[in-house]
Image 1 (cartoon, rainbow, N blue to C red):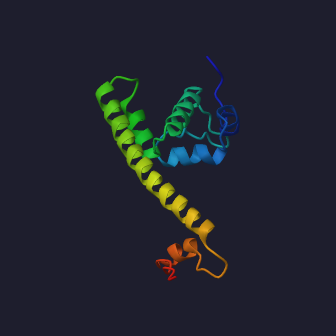
Image 2 (image 1 turned 180 degrees about the vertical axis):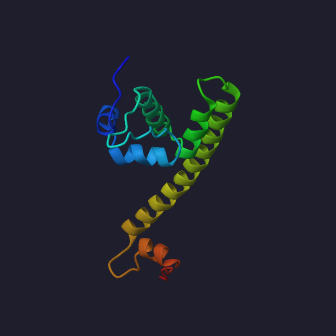
Image 3 (image 1 turned 60 degrees about the vertical axis):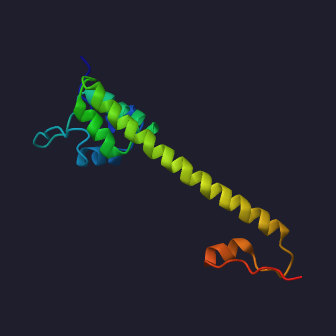
Length: 139
């Protein structure tokens, strides 16, 4: 069995800041050990695995609220529930991808319009940001 860790040692081993650990505690993702009188809190090495779980979940796009749901399922015993959380995340990501794709297309169109603008023309990018349609050229 490994020795208990101080918050600084735990943070270093997990590759996070001490404040990150405290934040995870406030969010209820990891427990806060008892602080002995005049001493320092000591963390069990299992907390290191919990932090690794949290970080891997975040890398997959899960919010901390979703991570808490997954942690609360415990020990991989609820495949249906964890799958439902993951499916919701995929649906959310699909919506984000669609929105980002629309934004990208609009920006690309504005860039092309900006390239075609002649000196003295109203900048189509600024016009868009001003909420105006760029004035049509009359020839």
